[in-house]
Length: 583
Image 1: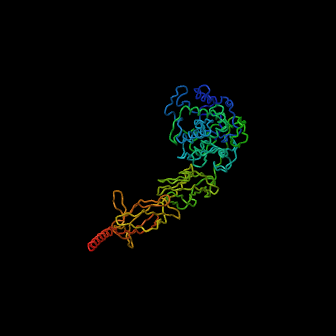
Image 2: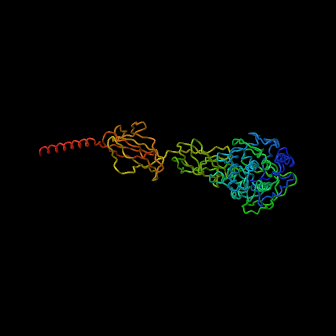
Image 3: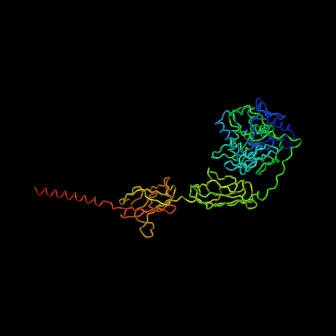
């Protein structure tokens, strides 16, 4: 998170005085009472003592220059900013959205803090160049890890490993991680789930921005007050040059920004697209003094104090860290391979029982630990990993393997692929074919037992069925209903009962039927037809389950009714004859 600044702030600005002049130019038009950056002599603003704990990222070097002196609207000219300013004022869409969402979230739980999103943008610019210019996926996770240098005490803090390499891939020393550069131990305390996916990921801009917002608002800080804002920034990184640089970007962004597409933001000099931040890539690495105690005395949790006393400045120009020896074949990543994943098949809406597993190999063919692997779902599918993610980044374990989260099929059937790649490398990917099949049923049965009869010309009562798969209700299963002949090899019957489509058309096969959430299906009205007899109805499900039922059509009783009328006539005639005889 926090980074230690050297004394040179931008290329061509060889003294701190030049940097201070740039800051003064940016803040000159803010008027009386506006927040002020620290003065030119590297002293903190009044009352801006940092917290009693160390900076959250171990004071690693930074890469960002001061904002350009040609701001989108020069100080003092007007308050009407252009729709789009310079390239520097553009913030990638996902990054900007994360900052604004954090401001809204914090305002809902800690309104007194008055956290401005522009402060997060300023810190994000300094820490990672707005996540390397917005190189994030649809969920806001960086396409490759953003790691600070190993905090091994050479020019910055000494922080031995606190996470067994879980976040930073380094089991010897800690490294700052992600868009807002948290050290792992600080993330354990302050990590947040900003995008609601159930995970706290320092490589996700929504998670990292919310964690940074909570961190800046620690205690009872009111960031609308200059001294509190300075305290917050210095607690993030106890360096006066860092404070001035963040302040200058803060004022710059307050004067106007605009959204640019992800991946098109401006990268700071030296940051590039590599995996790690090298200590030699940025300005000098003069260490900061040990922080003085915080005046707050708040019960709010603070970042753990891991670094020991920082070394004093060496005379003259700071020396560079010793060169890192070339890795041996046993430490070199040679590629990835399938680690025993079998066929990937699942019915629509179900989870794949097989888990995707990959193994990283070193130059000797053995396993390689701490390799970052990106799993990505590709193709025309709505399948996704747990939490709805189509892309996840995980790290191999001691045996060189890593297993992807559970993969769940969507409602779209067909084939797709999952690709596993070594994050940030051009090594060949491992591709896994996957297939989503239609929902199936292994049994289907009628739910009633009464005999199904209807007079000719009438309709049958509603007929209901239930489909099952592995003794559980099979919902969403396709069903076909057909009137069939009573032959050894039945075909569609052209006589007897029928269905009626819209417009009154008679059909004896219905398709496109589907069971409901309980596996049930109620057929539309069946017309008996005009020919008495016994007929068969067959239902067939996706998966091959079938059931046959009998339909009996009885002759109409109109003839019997007419006979009854004749009897009545005969009775009347007999009565009349008997009356006459008696007379």
